Image 1 (cartoon, rainbow, N blue to C red):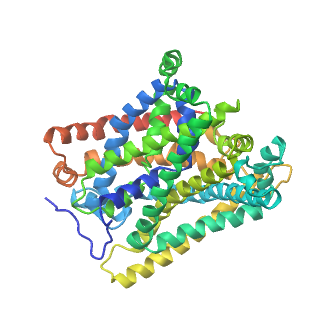
Image 2: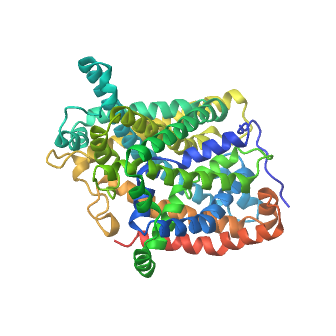
Image 3: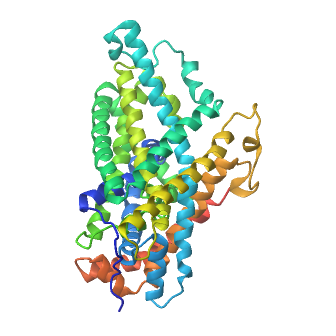
Length: 493
């Protein structure tokens, strides 16, 4: 039986807390701030939450345990970890294709995620600038007023469109965000990623809780609680009948925990042997689900207070909430805190996205610490710059069509779910509907059927043989079928 791999000069998290913060940071992103509350409300509220929790427990948690096991057992990078475990199990190293799928998906996602994070930074800067302008004109009393004071509803609604019409400005914010991400990742696991998340994640949680308390006190708390948690069994029955409830819950559970992208395989590589994989995985899924629910309580009371549309999707962040910030007391401060929190959430996710490829560039050979540090620096800079360049295509694809350019006219694949999709929409659908589910399907099959039972049992360290057998059945049979169903459903136009 092959024992656990030890790779020389490999960095590790300093402890469980550091890993947990980093893993939660990779999972908690901009999608948690709008997608989960919206999907829950539109799919039966509390009924959906129950189905979602079931999906997290039965699908998300076992796959997360599998990814962490593969990473820590294999070591090196996501690619070399899978190849090494396959070889030790007497199988072909071609299984490492699952890591390449995840790595390419992370690259594509980061290229447009950085652009969207740039929009968030733009709104943060706009709200700070507006507040200081108000203080300059009205004195400190402006602090107690709303955000974007003096602007009309049309002005606020047109801010994002105006930003799209100015690709040069978007590129500046895109470059700033990508530059910060590269700087953190280039400094290494402990000196960069761990140092960043130990500051960013506590700050994120503090701001989130402050915003929740303020929102519940100032807004329509009962309406928000009803929207998010009251079971609507009529909708539940309809959505279970047509299959959309289960696929929505599975999809949300899968993507919310960053599965299929090998981010968790990469973070698992840095786990020490004294850290419990089952315990760490449970902490991550509970925290991620909790953040998604709490984020809804930070936003929807304010949305309902001003009679706005909660089912706005991404527009909730960039149109609906800014309008609410304008009308509410302390709206300027609330808006600044919200967009700062969103920036932190975006940054912790982007760090994980870039780390997947950087860990591969870091090398898996017996290199000196100085050589590994140099390879990491060059890898982070080169890959980050490539993401920045690719992101420019996304930026120009968002320019309104009345100002035509190559990227807002080009449709890479004009069929099926990709019909009519520009490069940004294409990359979004390709990663979320194809590559991530495919990666999750492959990692489930790999962990369940390729990695030997003895290796998996030893590495995971369940407290009982019964728990291991339950996990093994889930990851062998239930997870591949469920993830495959999500993938097929996502490919239906």
